[in-house]
Length: 285
Image 1 (cartoon, one colour):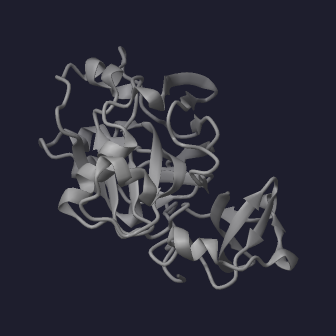
Image 2: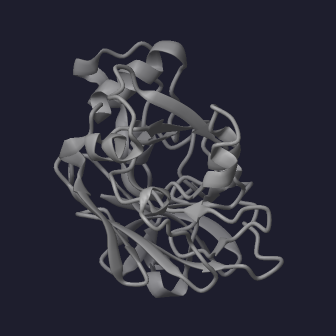
C-alpha cells in the first residue's frame, strides 16, 4: 500500500496511491498521530472521489509529526569522508515539523547561508505507540518507508558542536512522495541515489546502514515514546557537497533529487526568490 497526504481543490486529504490515481480515505486528512497502522486498516475508501496524481499538490508525507528524529554518520562511507571514527551509538538530532516540505516543493535558499548541502536519506514512519521496544519487535511498529532530503546549512551546522541550527531550517526538508508499507517493501537493501541537475552525486544502498532500522527504533524508544506518524531519518551515504574538493553547494535554479528503489523520488527546484516559504500544513487529523 502507498499512502499520500495531498491537497486538492483547497482541501487536505489522505489517500491511497494506485498507479496514477489517488483514492481518498473517509475521515482522514493526513498521516499523523491518528493514523496508526490499525486505524488505516479500517479506513473506508472513497473510490467515487478518486483524483489523478497530476491534479494534486503533494504535502510532506507526514505533514505534522510529533517528532522528527534524524541519524547522523550512519553509513561507513560517509563517516570516512568526514574523517571521523565509527560511532558505537547512533548520532541523533531533531528537526521540527516546520522543516518539512512536499516531494515537489521548492527549496528556498536562506539569505543567511552560503553552504546549502544535500543529504539523500531513507525515512521511516512509525505506526504504533512504542516505548522500550526490543530490537526483535521493533519492525512491528513501522507504518512504512519514504524518501527524504536532509538539506543542511553547513556554515550554520558547524557554528557549534551541536547541529540543530544547521539541520532544522524551516521549509528545507522534502519528505515523500508516498509512504510505502512494509508488506510491499522492507526498507533493507534498497538502492539510494541523489542527483544534482541530472548528475549523480550519491549512490549507495540501505543495506549499508551502520545502525539498521530495528536498532534505531529500539534505541530511540528507550528514551522517548514513539507515536504514530513520528519520522526517523536514517542517515545519508557519502557524496555530500561539503566533503567534495572543491566543495559544491546548492544554488539558485538547481534541481536536486533523491530516489530510493521502490519508494520513489523527491525532486526539488532550488530558488533564492524572496517570499518562497513553506506553507502551513496545520489542520486536519
